Amino acid sequence: MFYYNRAVTSAENGSYASAIEYFRKSIALEPSAAAHYGLGNVYLDVNMKRAAEFEFRLATIIKPDFFPAFEALAHLYLRENSFLQAEEIMKEAVASCPGNWKTGELSDLVKFSRFTDLLKGATDAFTSGDKTTAYRLLYEAVHLEPQHVFTHYLLAYLYFSERNYPLAKAMADKALEIDVKFFPARKLLGDIYFEEGRFENAVAEYNAALSSDRTDPVLLNSAALAYMNLERYDEAVRLLQEAAALNPGDVNLLYSLACLYRDSGHLREAMSAYRAVIAKDTAFPNVHNDLADVYKNLGRPDLAVAEYREEMSIVFEKLALNPQDPFLLADMAAACNGAGKYSVALDYINKSLAVKKDHPQAYLVLADIQKNLDNLPAAQDALRKAGQSSSRKYSFIEKRQESNRGQTAPLPTP
Image (cartoon, rainbow, N blue to C red):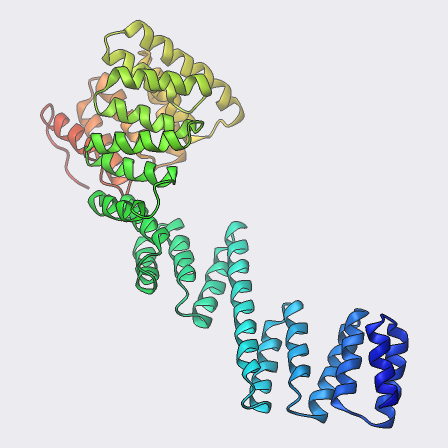
């Protein structure tokens, strides 16, 4: 015991070289689990991890129920993110140390550590674009902790990002089955229903989420857009005003509010809101086109043309940097169309659709161009494609289709 006690004292004083020497002398005289365990801890203190692992292992061989050595090994493996080794050592600890309550506590720590590492790895993989790895790690996490709500939510979000709405909904439903008050899943369900064009269902889910939190401008904006698609403009305006009050510097919210005023027929309010957007960001996408449309509806064609030309000037500069951007091409087409340059507009919109064939807004612009060119069948066809190119159900597209049907024979569905 003389050398063992000197080793312990030296280790406590930070004299690691002396501690190692005395522990070795103690072990040479009388090998013991405590001495090997003590030597292992000293090796850890001087960052000799493999030597420490070896000594802890010897301690468990000499005394199979020596729990401190198992605990030291588990923590060593956890620090190295060697979760499978940590799990294996805990299985051995449970078998070798029956009745020790600390084994259960440490096993839970090992399990939780691996679980959180899986979630972190999945999040990192998703962020870097490696969705295959993200799926694999998340399903490993589900297998490890089947009742953890956040894992199912992350899977739902991942499926949603790939537009796999049935599986996204299944995972969101599972998250709510585990915890009915997990309102992020409610919001995600609302987003799923919104993309599917099931706006009544979306509103119900958004309102359930809002019952828990009315401080999220994004959630308020999503709910407002769902109401907008249901043409329930009063509720939509109220929610967007609430969102804008929470984040007055957010130009996107202000733009949404402007569009809502326009679509609900409040043209003066829309004009004011669009101007406020321009004051914050004169190059905000399509805002001059939108303001021009409002001026045109207010009977001010001179102001409308000026805004269309401003949009053309802004987009021209942007296209110089991104000539194949389908959204910029569509914005330019809308501006040219508004300014009466129909053939130029048609050229731009065809370029946009050549790059992105599933661009609903581009088809709406094409419909307006064809209508201005008195080609009503082509306008009707463009409106039909606008509806087909989106999973959403847009009531305003259906109305425009119905209006055009009164002017031309319906086209056969391919």
